[in-house]
Length: 358
Image (cartoon, rainbow, N blue to C red; front, top):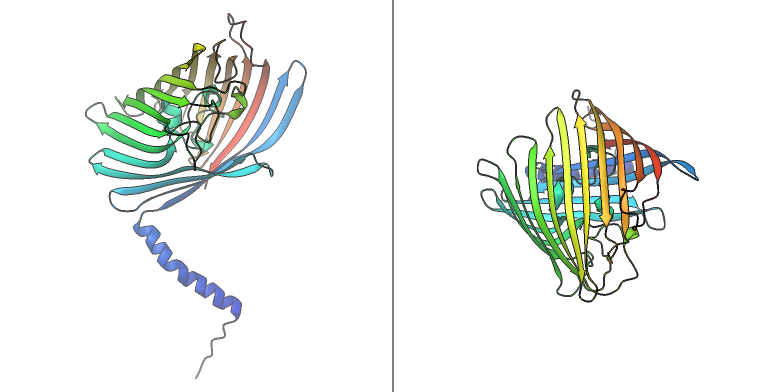
């Protein structure tokens, strides 16, 4: 008895596609390549003395790729779709770095990466699932050089205190992913210890020079930049952070002193501090509070001078490791005693955020 196998064009295409994926799947398995997706959605109501505004919003969506090239070389990439552009969203390569393990717990990194400044910027990527609160600290919109494109020497888990170090030289905040700002590089040095599981204490120093006081793709929020001053500015930032997670009481405290200096108009000293405290009732529920302030000096030229204070209460519900819901009620205002500075508009905000991973 003879059987005839009929294969139409569609079936032929499906079979060809499946067969073509077999080598790729084998390579992915051999290289231990992992692909993860992250995203979030929000609902917000904000109320001030004049207006009340409520809206839903679709947040950043993030494709995270990691894998081994050899047993000593690994790759990490992060591709994000975020707000902006003519359609309301724009694509961005947030991370693209190669890491070479040249000796035991010592590494050389090259590419675009987060600047090792404070715990939050060094540890969290764009996946809001891992954030302890809904929003980043205020400092991210003013002084934090979020990304750096360059070289980084790194050490991890050295000695009994799990000592770590990071030395970075990279394009400065005026640069973009495809262009620099002359011979002006940023420098970052940081050290940390991890005395016990879930605890990290970090201190560091960051230096940058902006010849024209303009912002590139590695800087903080453009909306708070002082566009009226166009001469060179030197930025020196000393930062400290204390983090404790993996226990009943969760704490994250980040403090920074930022000194901006010009050749003709002197220097300004600015301060910022962020505090988060949470209590993990069980593996699902974490009530928390936050306190966040930033003082940009009266003679500050790099950003718009500001007296900003935010504090609030919140609750995080981890349905499982892949999805959580956060609720926050916050008040924005100003710190008493700095009446000569412009104040952040006084208002209340009520926020819900659904974060997930795929």
